[in-house]
Image (tube, rainbow, N blue to C red; front, side, top):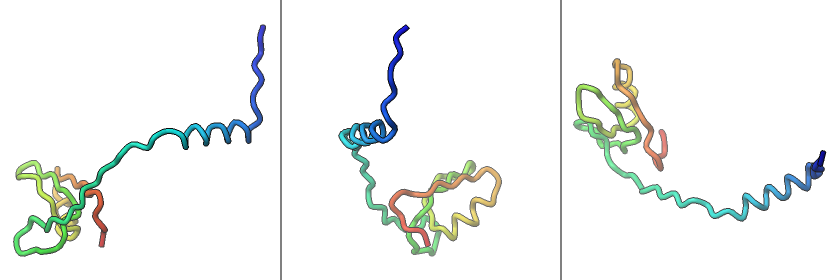
Length: 85
C-alpha cells in the first residue's frame, strides 16, 4: 500500500496562504446610501430596511426601526454602507 507523506505544518500553511493570495478577489460594489428616513417629519439618514407585512417595506432611521420592530411580524435589515448612531 502506498502512503503519502504530510508536509510540515509551516510549509503547508505557507503554500495555502500563497494560493489564497493569488486568487482574484470578488468585486463587491456597495452604493453609497444617503436616503432619508421614510417616516413623516424625520430627516435622519435611513439605516435600516423594515419589512412590514401589512404595509409597504421602507427604509427608516435607527430610532424609528427600534419602535417598528417591536410589533409582531416586522423584520429589520441593516443597510450596507451606513454608519450606525
